[in-house]
Image 1 (spheres, rainbow, N blue to C red):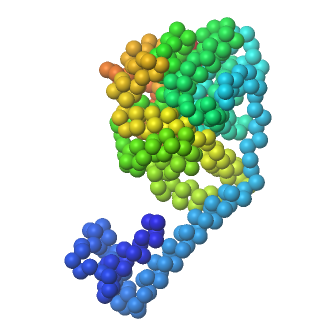
Image 2: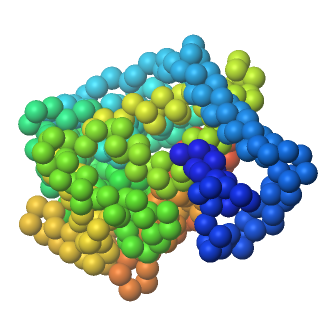
Image 3: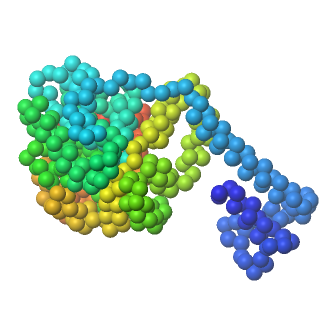
Length: 396
């Protein structure tokens, strides 16, 4: 749409156009470009610039389409074998990643309940054998139990956030009983926000709380969130009527944070050796992004209107199971990891959890020169994020 609008803009600004408005000022930034284009039309013949503009739009569209088709036709698919399921509740299950390494199966290994977002599935934490945070944790003697939320069934389509936190509470109780000791809890993205509520409600059950890019103050930095904030109430109404918010709409909200991301990333993908590790990882990540589950209707309303619209978390007005969730009251040792290049969860949003006046009381902050997804799958993730996270969890 942006590329196509270039032709419409040219009709308004070109010399002698029947629809041009002589009283409308060309934006200062574009004035030299428009002047040069008009000069080209005057010396090179009418329509020369316009034809060149049309060719460039078509070239860009073709390249984007070629990149998308190359991704869709790529033969790579995720093939890692899943660890055993050890617990179920509705469509939610626990996967025992401790079964993937002998060190994690030793008596006394620290159990860790790992909680991903409700929006994207968990596979980004176990993308390939080489880029699996969960398998790396197991190889270092931790015993990760991963929450796989699944897709909401008919009953779960009526779940609110309290219902999901209650389910986490039951999962944590199972893990503690199986390990014969308290477990640590690790939450990624929205999963981190949910685990703050879990720690507030069950402080004696949580040995340590690790939060990876967990949003808390949704008004701390709203750069790029204009569409999300304006469309939030309408989408919440849609979720009320449909019973869920489909993944395609959730993807549109993510795309709105960086409208040119698809253009840039599929262009880069097209330039890769399609048999390379880079191309393989691109396909696996793109599959993960596109295959997320829908969001239950009440949860969608709480997030879009409560979190993003009214910022109830930062205002200490988020109520779960009848209690206000106030980070300052949580005494559990906590690690807050904040990727500085995060566009999905702005660093200032996550940093609210370490604020001296309103954040967690017993907290360690770790800033990372990585992005939201890069903190778990990039080439630097192991050294900058995985290793300090694992050491912190072991020390609990």
